[in-house]
Length: 138
Image (cartoon, rainbow, N blue to C red; front, side, top):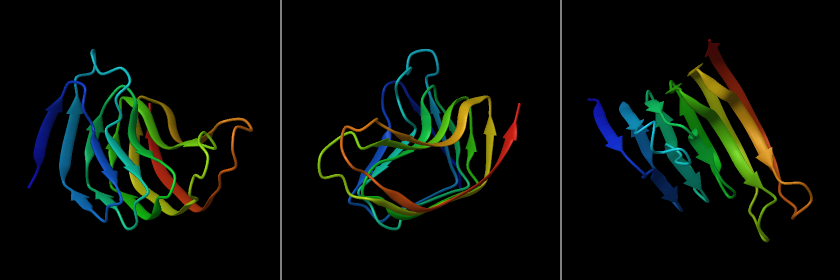
């Protein structure tokens, strides 16, 4: 089953969640959603994003502090920034990001592909056990 969702200024957000997202097509209004992530995950354990297509002008998937044991598999991303572990070291008392697997994903027309984004010396933050294995198409 494929669910097609058209958003203007919204995103799918998961905090303190254990969720399975599968076979979703997520299209954000590309001209008007300039700073809108597709799927935003934070402080969650065991989220799986599988076989999903995401088109946005920001991160297709953004992963925030406290996220653990995430699997992102079979995602088609683009246009947008790509898949990002974001804003590490931005706020006090951030929890570590641990155990993120991103594989069998296709990045098309993304500015970054996959990345870990941190802030310079604001606060202490860590991420570990991160595995990226994606395909990039121009």
